[in-house]
Image (cartoon, rainbow over all chains, first blue to last red; front, side, top):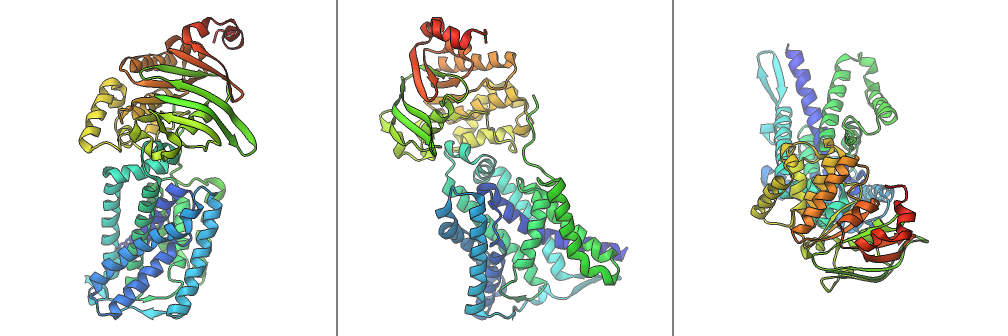
Length: 295
Length: 235
């Protein structure tokens, strides 16, 4: 029983981080039709913003809020500087541009800050375990699950209810037609990037709170996982990112649970194999976009 | 209301629209008819700013359309129901209408949604369903309702009867005729020539990127050459 609860928590923990990241990718994909490879670097930017602010003596939670906004702002800047001049070009051009941004940022982090990992002091509140009988649950994991689910619910309300959310979904569904209705292209795209940056910042907070350090390539691994989650779930729909994220989290936790110790190293290979299977047999993901109109 | 003079549109080296001129007066229902590939949809996309015009001028109530961004045309009263309906499939019917009325105040938008549901009772029944689950005819009603949300003075309808069952086609044409009665100016592009000519005031016939004939819709319906080229099969 204890083991099962721990297993469940690790699924939710991994899944919710992947889901937040995959959502960030999907929100931008919906508007511009490309996967932003620099998405992971927004996590890293969050990490450094947090590191410096704590260095300047700001309280942790204020630093977190500012760093999340900073990540959102960086995403908007990224769009203004790099992607807007390429508006209307093929998504492939945008994809390759995002590789370039990511590469450039890595070098900047390495040269301007440090190629090595920098520890971030995590408050007491987030370290250690809660014990319930025989059950040890890490506080960071519980925090992750609560924060992630709250953000997912808020995001869902924003997309479903607010006018801007409806505009975002409308232009993700048909960009040109949405423009003819007065939905401003620049505004929705900027909004999508801001959201993706905030989501990356949230994910980074959760990621870092379990690791306590930031380094130039911090965002790379989670970003690749998010990419897999987004593709498995389907890029056309935020729901897909959610399913993909939790499915991937579930798969990873399960593999960790069932694989014998000497085979655990193959965990990533098995996950990538699943990605290939999806790309071949179900390239649109679990939630495919265009339901055929029924006559 | 709308005055187009000698516009040219090309896709790379291919000229799709080769210098066409037409006008739509306030309160009129004007139709542009012609076969597939005549350049009708391209003309409309140019009017909405979705494809660039290489030369010529387009005036809406005397204002140069080329100076207005795509997003600004609706605030000047120009609204569009695109070819193939293009409803927002993953959005509910209600959210499609909300998107169509996103330039309105919240209060006004709710009022318009109410009006649209009165006018298209079917949309009320389906208001919480995703638009992608509607039938073709229902999607067309939604596309028209969505275009009417902003209370436009001029509506452009691109092939509203495309791919619909004959009975539904008649319904769609009835809706357009009723719409015209409310005083909205309508530019209708169609391949269903007989039905379009029956409800329109005036018509332009397009062939291979040019306007080859124009005039009173009733007279064009009687015109021998049009009968021969378009209506012979009794379509």
